[in-house]
Length: 193
Image (cartoon, rainbow, N blue to C red; front, side):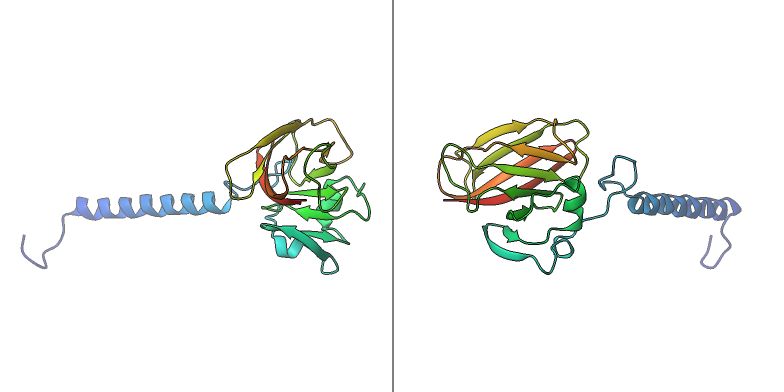
């Protein structure tokens, strides 16, 4: 066939069919990407709000210290934290929000003290516990060892809480806590003296 000649009818049909397949594939991909795939879900199956740390910290909260990536605050707490702890917030305690902001800790003493006995912490999680325990692994920030590990049972309420009788870290410094529960995980850096 020469330049400018008409294409066979089957080729036009094939092009239309391929365009249709490509369009449907792109539409399916867009729906999958916007439907919340990979987004945390609440226990009722609805997508959970994507938390943003800046929006969660009340303007009246006062930073009093901290280390690593997580400041410690005193004062009003984020609304989600009030809901997650079953509206049973321990008043007046310093608190810190994890990264991502799906967990938080109320500190019975600040700064925390290294060595036994460990200082008490109330862990609160924003995503449902779904009957799972909280697994905690701590290590000095920027170091692979030493590590300290423990587990807190899913047996407290109200709210999504894990009371912690104290985790003994062996030395002062900034310690990174890796937290895992249900299908969620977060990290929080805590200062020990």
